[in-house]
Image (cartoon, rainbow, N blue to C red; front, side, top):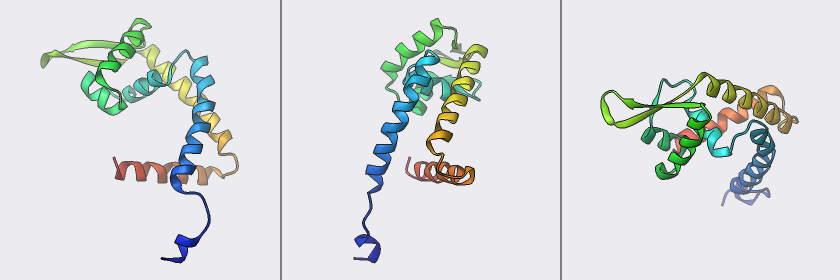
Length: 144
């Protein structure tokens, strides 16, 4: 057993779980103010910078069950935040893309969430905040 194994302190799972609860609680009123659910925001965010994704690829990237994704897409389409089109290379597939209105909504929501995150991480310098984000992204990419 190494000296580090004997050190007191919370395990990563407990820390991340507690932080996730705080972030979700702070994001909820922001999403509500923008008229979005958490899943709708995740879906719209995954479409940013994309010219169009198949529904299957969007389900994979958003980690949403494809059968549940359809209901979200219907709601987003009704609000003109996305457009769905038949894929020219395979008429059985549909692609999904953001509309200009959808892009504007994602950007506004993202801006407000980033402000909340900056407030949440206020005890850290801007550099430390970026390092934390980058470190977490690296761990996630390595294990996805």
